[in-house]
Amino acid sequence: MEVFESQTDRCVYICAPMVRYSKLAFRQLVRDYGVDLAFTPMLLADSFSRSARARDVEFTTNAQDRPLIVQFAANQVDDFVAAASLVRPFCDGVDLNCGCPQGWALKEGIGACLIHKPEFVADLIRQTRARNPDLPVSVKIRIHKDTRQTVDFCRQMEAAGAAFITIHGRTREQRCQPVNLDVIRDVKQSLRVPVIANGDVKSLADAQRIREYTGINGVMTARGILENPAMFHGHLETPAECVQDWIRLSLGTGTPFPCFHHHLSYMCDRAFSRYDRRIFNTLSSTSAVIDFLRNKYDLAL
Image (cartoon, rainbow, N blue to C red; front, side):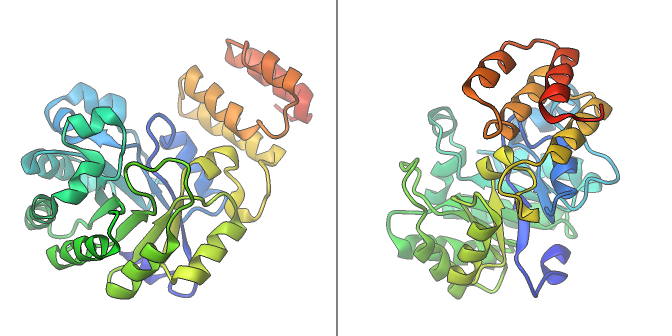
């Protein structure tokens, strides 16, 4: 992908696919603070490909929202191929989620269970590329308990035509354990395509440390960038100007109030006292939130 080719001298910074959170306004915000590549939230390929309403509700973009990867969850190749064809004019690649560990996803045959179905994933990559030759296809995975299985899986995806591979360095059973950087390093040393590290990236220093240890091409962050959208600019916590930018962008794109409010809860958590947090959580309108933050941060709103 061009973004990796143009950043060969440094790590590519990536905003992860986050259900409910990595939508248009937030992608625009983090791009202004050092993100090179952004993902949409995970979308269900079957409903997306069959329902215009689902597409209208779940996928919004604009001309400035690039480069963009649209991530889908799928348990049928045809659903993924159809969904990929629909978003092809509006993105720079599509990604298959092979990492979601939630129980509902595993029951549906999507997410992290797919790391045990290499033939299915490889076929999905090949068929998507056959229908959309110029559209990069990537996969995001969790690791196996056996490092060799992870390396073998990634080699098969590379052979099938994957443009890059993102590795969350935990098994599907793990939640809070430290990520396994040794597995990520082993995969990177075994592949020619770019490899992205995901997990435990909460600051620019974390990103640099992981890059140095593993040699990967990029780092992806989720919770870290929710709490501090300016992390890749070196800020240790969300600066006031970033809060102000979020308000401007979210209002300009019609972001629903719950999403607007939840993002601010994450961004401002370190700056809020316990009392501030209690008051902020009771606010139920955009105007009330803006008034509260105007007083807290002395913002020009």
